[in-house]
Length: 355
Image (cartoon, rainbow, N blue to C red; front, side, top):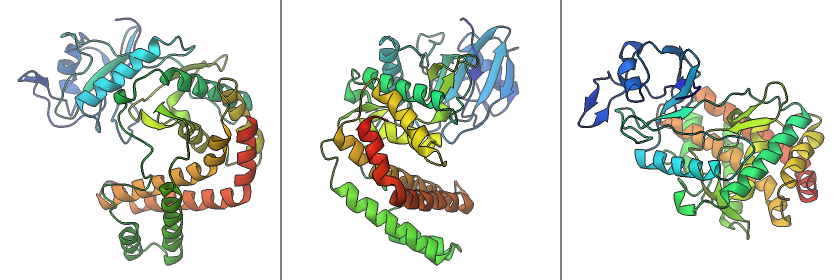
């Protein structure tokens, strides 16, 4: 194995080694060497706790100059992780100027090992830092990388995707009805006016989504093209890697553009026009948005904000999130709604002009 860092996610029940061909995951670092042995990593590998995400709990491991990323998914099955690996293999063969995760085969030849906490994977380390997206040059580079990724994903069979993101953005298994959710939020102490705005925007999004995609180009998309999933060269600022393909699925291509703008902060400052234009200019250097995509961008942004609020509300109903997290998402939805009322038309024009 060459240079690497190991991130371990999904530590769960006490690890008992191999059972019927499975490897169970450790709850503590004392058990870690047994899991590392599956990838021939020695027990004296240094373990550094890493930031924990919603879908993966993570540790960083190093041994000398060797670095790898090991993940145990909390949300995907082994078959789904295998599908992600097929997508990544096709992308690595596409000649992209930046890297995507490269899974490493374990001792038995597989790139996925079942654990009691979920499927485990080791990937080669990709060096880089998070981009500073207050800089318009960085945004333009991010936009170009998004365009290049979209072109590369065009060649991936849709059946390799992990879902279909063209469906109702308000759908969540724990939120069977928005009206019932609003009742529960009011009972929990959320202000009636705020809850009423959530209900009104959700109903609006539902009506708009019911009209369908309107001929928008669809293919496999990244599904979570946030700035947190981008690595750039610390010295040059060039994009070095795109990460976290666990939401890759069939969707409207413009949904990745929408997600990148939504999470980059480009729409949240006074100079939003210049920053948004920079991202769109980079994207258009590979593939300009067509008029239908430009027209759809504002409603997709609103749908994303509403879906984000309801998703967090669903986690709250399941006892997996705090009420404050829900109200934060609802405030974000309110801000997005007001912003689009004031600037949606100009956003369409910028998108149509390619920045």
